[in-house]
Length: 639
Image (cartoon, rainbow, N blue to C red; front, side):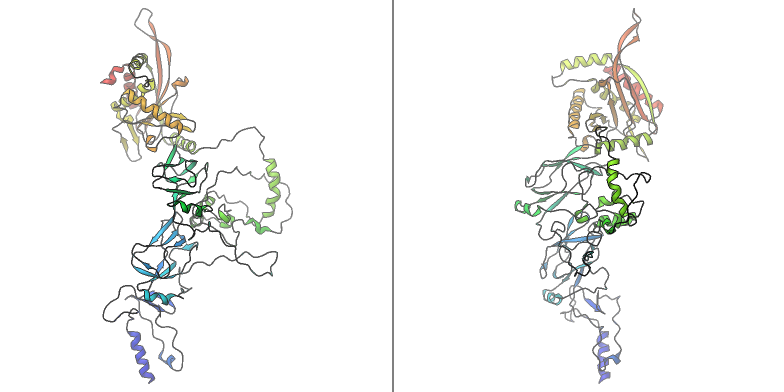
């Protein structure tokens, strides 16, 4: 009898397992899952069947532990990578409940990544049998199984008490951190960690909303400053409304709303500087009734950006530092970044710290509850002395340091550097260090231009008053057509020769120098050029230039003649090859064929700065000759 029973068991082990509830007559939709030794895995032809237990173990003993899994066919849904830099995520909210039917394209859950909160959709029809990672669970690694789905509703009850094998890789979420040990009462029983407020871990308490992040408003923009919010919390937003004014590396630009809604929460206050791209700025909701739910909302996945703080005073040199007292009895208080027994850090900051080899115990978190953010990692400076060796010496030195290093009152004023000023400094230094400048100067008789300007201003409407600068811009554009080498750009691998002349005009603003562009100056009339310059200069001084109005240009004119400057040399605006520096006109005695032998003329000095990689000296001289001819004989501009 035992031999017969052994044969039957051997035959059963050799027969492939059919999906639960399926007939032998035909295939069934979905995956068939098998369980070997307590682990789950998909059945496939490449996976060998389990080795049957020794037949002698059947006699007088309980059935073997290895056998077929009792769970019906199911799918384990892992947490996917929802952004290129994502390593972990937070389950912000489950959109489906256990037992709900999921259609193709339905939203299963909202996952908070290192960039934003992203909806996780289903790619096929199924039923949600078991949720393995509850709402609000933070730092869930990619690949961790977050739920179980089945193909038929009758399979759901089988997973009521389902739990993953703790030995399976990436199948469980790290347990919550233990509470910090009590130093004063070691015999007291441990208490659970305090509950996190809902603002720290967004979950189901937050209605549907949209995070508005800081976009790149110029090609070279990496950070921005929130100068002013045009809308207040609770106000209705219509498509096209101005939401805020953002100071970029070029100018102050209005940030418009793309769709209707209500401003529920402002996350970055006015005046906050150096806000990285992608940082959440505010929260917008569709319904006005959802606004109160975001009163205490704080974004914990992105960098915690704060207004600038005063610089920290450096400690004195070792020679002037007073002797340190004996070590204190509480050195553990220095570890401010681990207030709850573990390092609280955002996924992006953790990745950056690993790439840079930064010890997280030395980083002080500035986020909620001491959370280490991206900004903390970027601004971290490694300590020369290990923090565990001299925590006590830091405290007594702090008091005399503040008094010794305090600057005298009224001796100077520190002016914060704006984003525009930073970029101006970087680009000017780059230009002088990488572009081989050379300079050509020439004097131009402006007599005929001044007479022509006076005549034209008498004929034009009162609102149009031509300036000498309008004639200079027009003459520069025409000279670029005559000598196209000067209307070129150095692009490392090629020299791009432009077929249109877009003249950048240097304008001084309170925030710094900016160069709005007169497009197609070679085909525009003097009145049109005048109107463009007046409009662009006004917008530049008000900080309302749009990016396309100052980005680009093929040639630049910088005029300081109105300040009485005779001549100067300008720095090239890359990738352009030339910039013209214009000085003031002055009365000079010049040789003349008359009885006196001389005459008094209005002479203007100009200096052309050239990039020697693009414009040779002779080519630069040709350009100045054409430019001089157009100004000394204005009628040639009509040819």
